[in-house]
Image 1 (tube, rainbow, N blue to C red):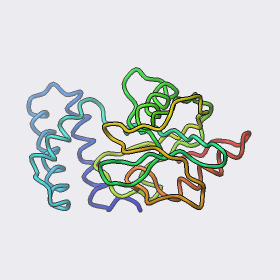
Image 2: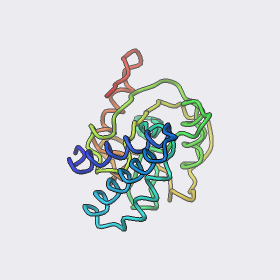
Image 3: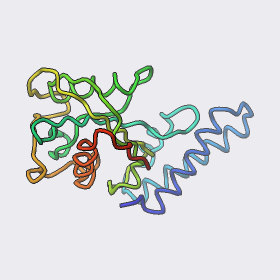
Image 4: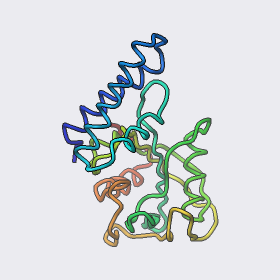
Length: 206
C-alpha cells in the first residue's frame, strides 16, 4: 500500500523545514521553518492519534538536508530456504537487517546486521534490489525509506536471539510464516527467491 495522501504531504512539509533549518542563518527563516515542522508534526499526530510533541521531537531529531533513510536486508538462501528472523516488537518474521550506519559500506552493513540479528555469519555477494519502501506494499511509516536487498553466502555461525529478534530459521517458499510487514512483505520475499535464482540477472530498482 502507498502512503496515505496526508502522510505524503506531511513528509514533504517536514523535508522542506528540515532542509531549510540545515542551511539558513536568518533568525526569521529559522522561526518559519520551525513552524513548518510543527505543522507537519501536528498533521501526523492528528491522523495517527499520537502526542504532537513526541512526533515533533522525532522530526526535529533528524538534522541536515532531508534524504531517505537506508534500510539494508540480507537475503540468505540455503537448500532452497530463506533465512528469516522473528521481530520481538511485533512477533512477525522478516529478512535480517536494519538501518545502515554512518561510514558503513553496504556489504559491511548487511554482514553486521545478519550476524547481530540471526547469529549467522555471511559474506555479501551481490545486489538483488533497491526499492522505494512506499512502492512495495508496506504499511505507512513516518520517514521515507529506501530498502536495499543483498544476496549473502552463509559462512558460519548458528541461530541465536538478540535484543531485537527472538530467533532465526530457514523457510521454504511455501512455509513463509506471518511477516512483520513494516519490514518485509510476502511479495518481496517471493521476489527475492526469484532474483537469487538468476545469477546473471540485473538488480531490481524502484
